[in-house]
Image 1 (cartoon, one colour):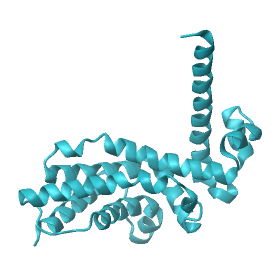
Image 2 (cartoon, one colour):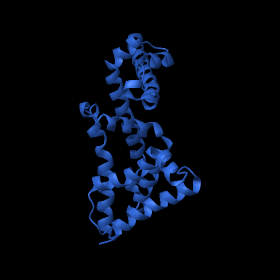
Image 3 (tube, rainbow, N blue to C red):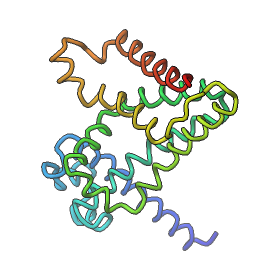
Image 4 (cartoon, rainbow, N blue to C red):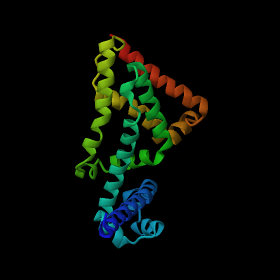
Length: 215
């Protein structure tokens, strides 16, 4: 490869690293302060870049926020796709998917806050994305495949819409993180307590499998 070609590759890698660094810090800033409270100056300072550089890459504060949302969803779908659920028996695949969703949401409260913030904005920015809908097709396709294999083998007897099932699983996992403090305060429960975590995960897995196993 020519030296010019090597320089182009090196420049491309530096550009991608700069974007990745900005997205990582911006995710934390938006999750902590919301869209209106987040400061591009603070993001620039923490990434050793400049507001001008950030606007060069993302166009605007809103463009950066949308890029953070897209990156956050891409991250969860990427790890989800690496589970190789198609290689597992249907019941085990469903348990594994629930296990993953439960653990991922709890380990990424910033993701939960970002989604909550965007719901406050009524998905105003998400609707402008050209990739978010396509990014999330995979999880519905995965669930659809598990359901189909389960029905073909006879372990799942109830027909369930895969998007509805995704909502059922996600809502329980999401609620435990988004409402941890309010729910815990009202009912005197620590949702992060290890025994509670184990019980809740088993409750969700058993409930979903019981639903799918009934005619």
